[in-house]
Length: 246
Image (cartoon, rainbow, N blue to C red; front, side, top):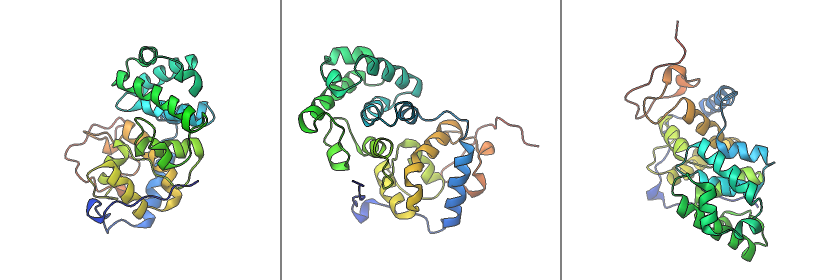
């Protein structure tokens, strides 16, 4: 069932900049869709593609990916799913077993507990299936809005969710789409300001771009396919371009 975005209080959300024009959003999103071709996809997107959008593997991989490099997440996910590809088999593992399999992801001991508890809850409350609503997903240990949104988008093909991580939060503010302080505020502001047809793609496009070009510090603005539309809000120094300009 599609999730209708819950509203935060008006005081907690900054309005998008009034200068944002729908045609610019269209140009930016279409430009990014073309520009990311050939770039490495975010690891959870890769896993979803390889596993035919298996909601369980999307859920667990997203839990492991928090504050962890993609290569590390990929290796840990592969080891874990090879040993235990289903909630029942994963729940049968001890926390120590899971921790050994997912090491060295960040906070691997805490994540191992969450993975174990999540699998047990899936068996106890959801008949071994990953639930398909926001409220139900947020009951699972370690699952926040980012993880839940990504599971709904990749695992359930939702067209009504926006997944916001640090890259989406940063780039949305740089583009002037929002003026927000937290990813959750950014999510709610984007529901209000962006056409719904782009909601499922924002995470894929902006995370891929953020990992490769629009980096947290010294973004490579000279290599940016959407530089003509970007006011570079908050950018004080840019990085060197990989391709020399003539």
